[in-house]
Amino acid sequence: MHIDPLEKQWVQVVVGVCALFVGIIMIDALFHGVNAPSNVETIDSAKLHLSEEFGEQNLGVSTDENGHITVRMVAGRYSFFPKNIVVPAETPITFRWVSIDVLHGVHVPMTNMSTMIVPGFVAELLTTFPKPGDYPVLCNEYCGLGHDHMWSRIDVIEKEQWSTQQNRATGETES
Ligand code: CUA
Image (cartoon, rainbow, N blue to C red; front, side, top):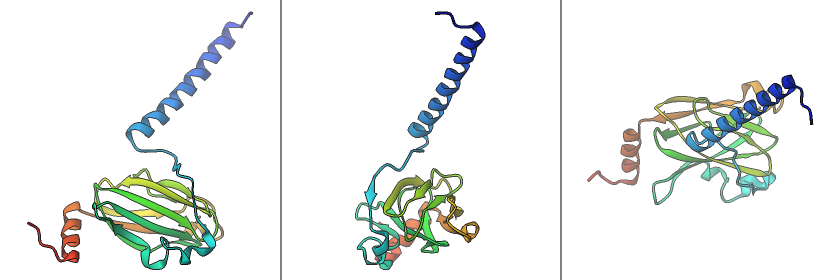
């Protein structure tokens, strides 16, 4: 079978570009924690306020007995709730997101946090904030006229400051 040399070259270019993209995806997935939220966990968006997990009193930051931090947040036109949360830097944190109405997205620049929040599903991801500061939380899926104004913030504090506060809250003293 005859293949024109010029065509052959272009085939090689195309294969090369594909390999480059697959390579970038692999490096991000393996070393930067960038991957698709793949737990296909369903939830009834219409009854969120009645659900155990996403009832108002359970939203925000919680720490389990092993000290792992989980943050539960609700996206709804046009904000993220709760409005302000405080978490420590340099600590792996599980975020669980649900939508109360339509499709939203969440993006926190300079972290791996970027996911769609699909009504009826829980979007879960593990992230770490590299350093203390005020991180903007932006909606990146068009969700209506107020989409441009749908944002919030996360207050990230020093790891040491966090543990001091935790100890104070539980009434323990550092030994
Ligand atoms: Cu929510 Cu755009």
